[in-house]
Length: 152
Image (cartoon, rainbow, N blue to C red; front, side, top):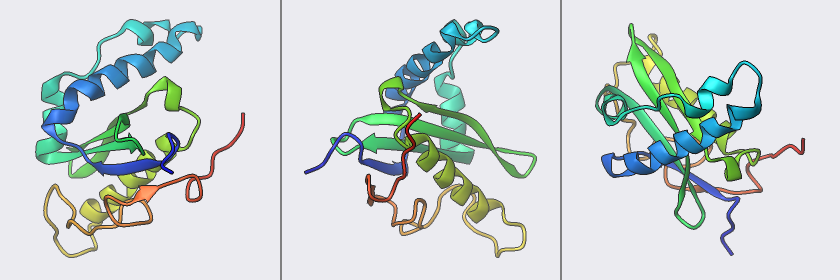
């Protein structure tokens, strides 16, 4: 049985962007009650052009639930010849379950693959289809047995 705590990390697409904007807005609301960070709750979110930059010359990773619903994302840009993690958000109801760590780990793996200046030249924006992003092949599910969650 596929559960809501099982996640798949994949390369994002243009069609994902409207959902990513919803997730960013939802995740920002967590800051509403934190003194000094209230501005984050209602501040500006990434526009479609910023996501497009990740698609064109960076990387957009999305985390889906076992049911196929996008629950989080990581947006990476190239900045001065290096990878820059521009945005990482997880929908509030999925926070604390390991999805953010999976996205961060996949982001680091992507960055190392494309910005390791000692490695042979690679495609500027996309890993090979079989490239291992999260301890398995792209498109494999990472479930509760492969993601440690911590109780707060």
